[in-house]
Length: 290
Image (cartoon, rainbow, N blue to C red; front, side, top):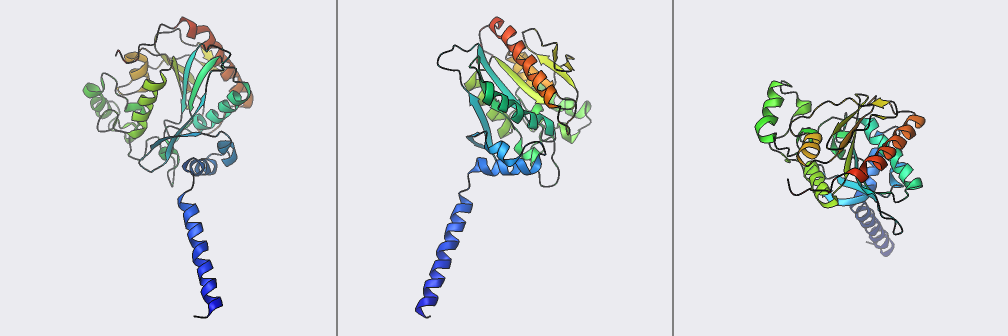
């Protein structure tokens, strides 16, 4: 081989190694934002990247990171309480994921330190980011909102699924309570963060549901209170009933169509007003005694 050909070949090999190295060391959160931005019409790739989401270090069975963002209390203020805000437990509820980014933008602009927030915008990334069509369940076919370790799970979860839903695959509770990494991580987050209130965003039943010890919010924007009860393995059952934690479930009017900007703001203002009113009256957190 002539010298110039040898040098050229060496350069090509070095360049290919650089390309391969960079592609195999892509930031997992950046990759997740790329997928989210390509999937959701209301959230661009940059909308996601600008949030600077934190990689929890836990990954789904499809190797996607479970991410969150925290808004800590300001040093000059004593927060009224801790709020855990979560969306996207069901992957096909697009609006329930998109609105999380809109609300994070409000916190980015107006976070006053009144509360200590931890935000999980997408608990079920595999469900949302299926190759063909988003699905309610995670990649193992488990409905994460039937997989929490409520006290009645062992006795009732499988029976309820078989007899009440006729083995509807969309509501499969899993082979055991907390069988899924997403559920286990969320339970670990509850235990470590010790929230005073959990807010979970869903769609499309157009209502506010509530479980727990405090006075429920009567309305959030145009959504009115209509309590649906609990199910074996649901978050409301586990956290609201077993842990005695207030759980506000926001059910948006449509899974595929976002509320107007005015409605998004109206819901947010009503939610914060309710938190300001109810959190100071909450009894001391007793997570871990149940």
